[in-house]
Image 1 (cartoon, rainbow, N blue to C red):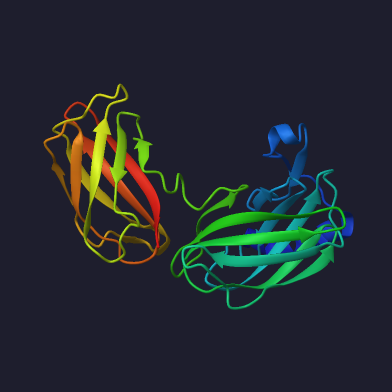
Image 2 (cartoon, rainbow, N blue to C red):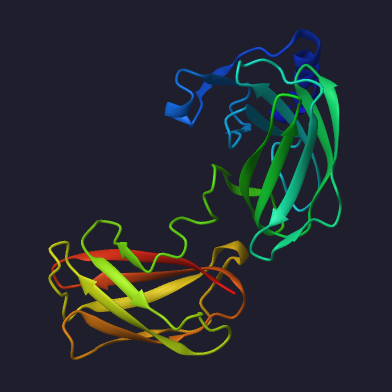
Length: 283
């Protein structure tokens, strides 16, 4: 029998007997709330502490995953004293940042007791990166937790993470200067502002070593794409070295729709090979 078939029974046990600790999770706020811990009930759940550290929120997907279409989700909420939160006004808001739209249907959240709540009609209308914001309101405090989820086409959850505090979608989004993965190079790009939509254009690159020495004669290959939609760049950009040491130009850049894009530069200097990655929004 699938282990997720036991979830409704486990939730019923929690309601009738109170929450039983399975795993203790430190509050990521750390120094602001020294020594505090929250209880995580299931290893396969999705867990976050709210922005102000007032509550922990744990999502348990009824089928073990979240997918395109209508989903039902159990929510377990604790306060900073690790006690069940009862009588709260709880809402869950699906949102797709890359397209800047919410779901067509408003989820309904029902309290089941013992710090557990059930969210019904959580509508995921298309594959891609979604955020689920869980808002908790009590006489003590109003707070929220944000979960960042990648839904794969025609299936379920590809990857999952919770979004702490003010972290934006994507790693190092918007940076124009990065250190490569193995720290062999520092790479900076300069593109038109704003980055053009659906139009060929060029980028200027500057590449140096960690000692700020210009990297010359490098062979550079470009790839990337749009992670939320699972497609690559629509063109094959070409990198040309200029007459200035450490300066290169990428011709043939083109981004075909708004949203989050990734561009990777695979750099071979003849002495070292490494990859630099840029993540940015096209609007």
